[in-house]
Length: 512
Image (cartoon, rainbow, N blue to C red; front, side, top):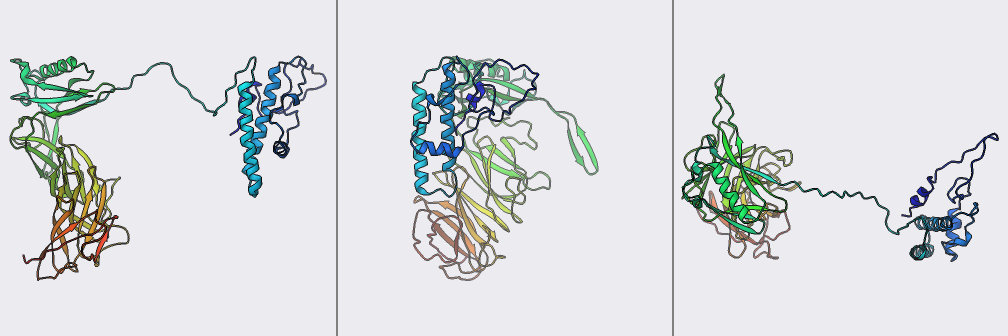
């Protein structure tokens, strides 16, 4: 874009400035500036004349063609007016090149002249000196930058409650062999509460000990504690609402991260855990519970204090999303995360379910936080019966689906359930889905990853699956799927691939 606004601004005017008239009785003011070529009193050059002159080879900037109407005016006016005329010609060339109906030859000539004209203006600016004006060639833009340095805000993280009661009391969760590594930036800082000696392990004392270690390591991140006041609770018994008194205060860690420092925690020794789901009330499955199986380095006494219906050994309690009807299966990954497959009867605004029910794949981190939720996308009804996590982080879910898995496609009978398997990557993004059905109903009930990278699915069917013969009643089957194989190792009739993948399979039928 050719922009003359700077030159116009030097004279406090614009291309829309209108002329004014004065009466004969008005005394004319003394002229202090020569008349600019963009003034309304001047006859504007026709764009066609400017283009014709440029294509004829005449220079765009010609100082000798500028005639100032004020004696003794600065030579800067001559240069500025000549520059304005040159930019005006460039603008006319650009407009001409954009007109419709231009022949290819004329378009090429116009573009070539514009390029040479632009180079001419650049050379002229680099060699021309002004007395009271500084001109810079470049792209017109506006930028405002403060000279005051503003520090980025630090990040604060509050943990789950660790202690319930008075802040001056020793904390049960800090008893015994408590050791962990706190990594701040690139520095791994070992925290061992045994270094506190005989000092009572109150919340304040432990916080002071951790901060001393952080200070010795030369990092800015610090740890403090946050009070969670006890609140009164109400329960309903029949038609009566009973208000219970407020319980004791709870206390949690507060991590005060510094600018540029990432913080993570890891246990020096890991231990097995058991996950259990439970329902509270009549709404379905509400909570995911975590139990420490063998003690390990995490005390099972009160890692999640104040949870409703907590029992000995429980170290975690997480509320499941709304709409979870049944949790079918779960599997853990190498990073300690937990993958759960469940039947979902209601989604949220971001992921509404399409039919009566759908399959939800939920990922929880080792602290019990819900990381992600993915839906299969069934148009009618689906259930996930099995889940597996591969060494590479892939997650496979298998089950049954009735109706379409994608718009306009379904099994041979929209009212009969078919088997399906869906593979997700380590982040929960869907990689591919395979659907395979018998004439009667069938379902996949087990899934696993093989050492060859294939996905193995087992299930049962009431009639013959493609490639096998029915033996009566419910028959078991085994299938193997490979996303890397380009040609099936056997015919794949009736297999509907939702994503781009192959359908290599093998089958074994047997009586139940």
